Image (cartoon, rainbow, N blue to C red; front, top):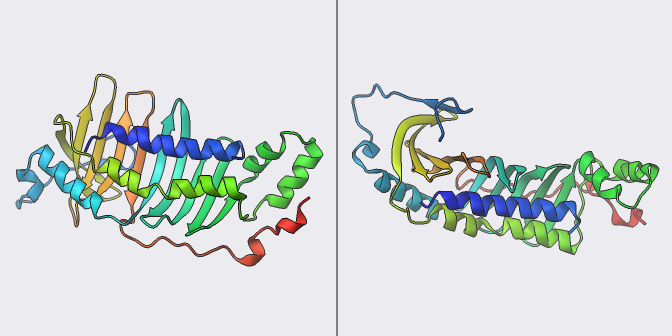
Length: 257
C-alpha cells in the first residue's frame, strides 16, 4: 500500500469539493483514539509470523473486496483543513458531511438524486456576496434547517465526489514501495490493530489494520508534512442510508425569487 498517496488523493477530493460548493459551483500512542497494547495472550496472532509487507498485502486484499465504508476525521491540503464524516459505497451513494470554513454540507445521494443541507455560516457566506446585511439574513433564515435539491452544477460536484469510491479503493490498495515497517500494536476505538508505518524525509504515514475479523484498514494518519491527515474507516460493507429527507424539510424552489 503506497500510503503517502492516500493524502494526495483523499485531500484533493475533499478540498476540491468543498471549494466548489463555497464558490457555488510518526504516530505514537499519545494520539487521540489510539492506545498502545501489550499482548498477554500466549497464542500468537497470524500477523505475528508475517512481515510488514505480508500484512500490508492482506489489508490491500480486504480493501479490494470492500463495497462501502465510512470516513471520519480531518484532512488538509495546501494549509486548508477539511472535516469529513461520510459514508460512501461502490454504487455512488453517500450520506454524511464534508466541510471547512465557512461551514459544512450534509449530502444524501442515491443514483442521480442529490439532496444537500448547509449550516447558517455557509449560507451567510454565500449570500453576503452581492446582498445587503438585511437581505443576507432574510435568505439565511429561509434556508437554515432546510434541505435543497441543488442546481445542476452543485449536484454534479457533490455527485462526482460520491462517485469516487473506486478511486479511493485504488489508492488504498496500491502496491507497497518496500519500505513499510511494523510498529507496536495499538487499538482503534477498542479494536486491536497491527500498525504499519512508511517514512519519507519529511513525513510519516501510519496505518492501523484490524486484527479481528477481516484485516480492514481502520485508521490512517500522516504527520510531519504540510498536509496532515487523520481519518478513521468504519462500517465496512454496511449499506449506506440513502433515505431522502422528509418532504416538509425540503425547500420549495418556487418560494425563491
